[in-house]
Structures are given as structure tokens and as C-alpha cells.
Picture 1 (tube, helix red, strand yellow):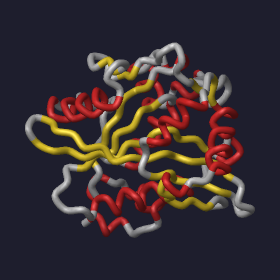
Picture 2 (picture 1 turned 120 degrees about the vertical axis):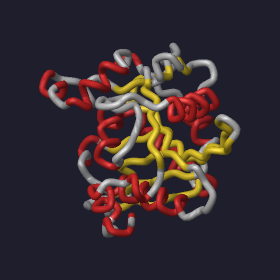
Picture 3 (picture 1 turned 180 degrees about the vertical axis):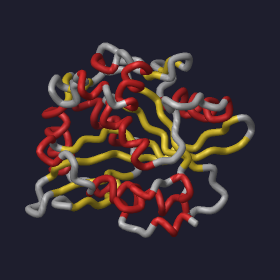
Picture 4 (picture 1 turned 60 degrees about the vertical axis):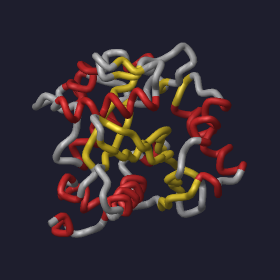
Length: 240
């Protein structure tokens, strides 16, 4: 990895950190507003901050723990919000490494039914799921169980009560919603030959205008793939 990542409590972010994060968002997204960015950041617990060796910000991902009740039982979810890696550093695993370490820390807390809840604005985010997880939803090869759908709906409604379309499993973009700039994650005919990319477009045809596919994966050691453990830099047998 050429980059370095660390998990920073949002309370420790300086104004300079926030300025750099917002500037990075503006490079990759259209319709980004500072007030929305600040509001999103204020509700988060942590930021995974990714820097190069000179200390320049090259990426980040905001993270928060959500608590909800689903069918009479408590569930907990690690929710990933704004996430971006500068285009020139695509392929570097530093952010994934730090996120995986954070997820493993949360798994150590006893008595939790724990999930990763995220929104896929582009195919690159959705494509992360089959790399890291054995089971996740929605999945092109199997239908989502009613139990898993109930968890996803509860979390998505809590986070996006006005914009979540539970029938489609998509958070609909409002007029002031940010969206990926043209050229950042375009879906080409070659990309569509990937079944996961094709499925993402099928499930979220409005991705270009900013619609986001709601996704869920159980956060357990057993659900991490061997590839996930390689990125996290732990032996896969720790899942046993």
C-alpha cells in the first residue's frame, strides 16, 4: 500500500481536515454543498482518513454506528457515509484495510446482531461487496430473505425516512442530492460484462442522477472472504 489510513474520531477533525475532505468531494461529485457535507459529518462517529506519505489527504470514509429494533430484536449496523479515494490512487487498499480493522473491533463486542449498512451510488462501491463478503444483499444469484429485507428496510427508513423507496430498495435522489461526476465511475459496455456491475445497474437504473442502492452484509468473521482477510492483513483462519 502506498497510502496510510487511520480511524479518527470526528471530534478530533480540525477545520483544515474538513476543508481538505470537502475539496476532495468537490473533485469527484457534482452538486456538493458545504452545509450538507457538514451535517453528514456531524452525525458520524469516525472518519477513516487516508493520506499519502507526505501527509496529503487522498481519501476518506465517514462511519457511524446505528441502533434499531427489527421484529422485536435489537440490531446494530456500521453505516458508511461519504466515501472517496482520489482517482490517481484507485486500487490502493489502505482504506479497506482500516475499515476491516474497525469492523473486527466492533465484532468483538458481545451480544450484537451486527451488519454493514451502506449505499452504493456507483458500481465501484457495490463491487466491493463480493470481494469482502460471502453473504450480502442484494445479490444477483439469490433472493433476499424476508428477515434480511426487514433489517435493511428498518435501517434505511431510519436514516432516510423521506427518500427511501422500500419496494425498489433504493434511496431516491432529491434535487439537491450530490452525484458522481461524469467520468468518475462510468458504466461502459465492457463493465457491463461483469455480472455484479450489470446487476447493480439493473437494480439501480437511476444511479447517474444520484439514486443509491441500499445494501447490507452481516458483520461476522465467518462472513469475511479470504480476500478480505488478505486486505486486512490477518490470516483467514482467524475466522474459525
